[in-house]
Image 1 (spheres, helix red, strand yellow):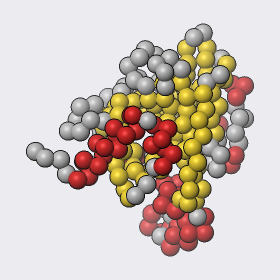
Image 2 (image 1 turned 180 degrees about the vertical axis):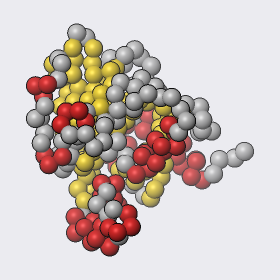
Image 3 (image 1 turned 90 degrees about the vertical axis):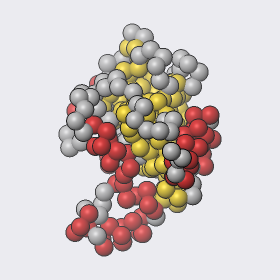
Length: 230
């Protein structure tokens, strides 16, 4: 069965990302909230995948679905469940509605089975990498209200990666770029706060209005920062 235009464009975006994730993220905004959250629910329904926020070692296929020019949505699916090649990666979540350091999601990096880790959208959060006895663990630290770095002394090991967003909003991708060392691509974006606030006010009664995923509809520019482990 031939692929649809959307499937073809998705496959092309996946290949472009795998060939050069830095260049891809310099010119294409990845909305890693709205599409991803819907697809997580579809992927995990009826599956015994454990806690996605804590040390889940499953590998998923991720797809970069075109939304419009210069913007794609990140979608998760079970491996081999789609007809187009995906980006094999793990997922770094965190616990919603939990106060303090209990929010943090973590994933231990082991073996050479995948070179990428995706996470849900950055809305004030920070990605942190910690080495302890040769083991590297990534944490997604939800730090809204610019409370960055407040829990660094609670990590069990040496903090070798500290990757905040320059604007507080964006997308983070973890990448084992040479087969051994890891880096974080932090794609920060600014957004038109007035337009977002006006749209949020218009539909606050029906959709919550202030959901962070809506910010991606009003972005104005992106800036890619690259953090290598020290």
